[in-house]
Image 1 (tube, one colour):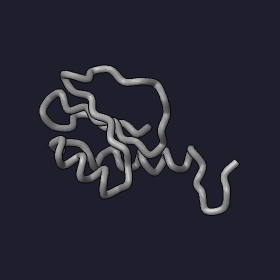
Image 2 (cartoon, rainbow, N blue to C red):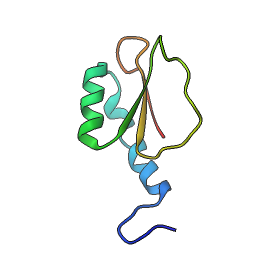
Image 3 (cartoon, one colour):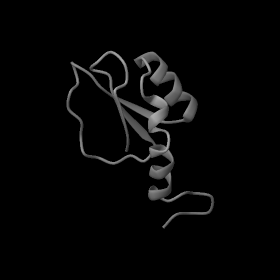
Length: 76
């Protein structure tokens, strides 16, 4: 149950998913700045950290920068 003024997990996740395209093509520093501006946690997949966990965080964006820029952005 959510309290007054709080969005459900589903609503928060939907809002974060809507932002996925905004991250595509950005360099890592730009993605970090955008995540900060949007109040999102950023999780980075790169050559040193190629694995992710399966925990769901509706205000987190996972970005894959193994190509040098964000090639994939996934909410949660």
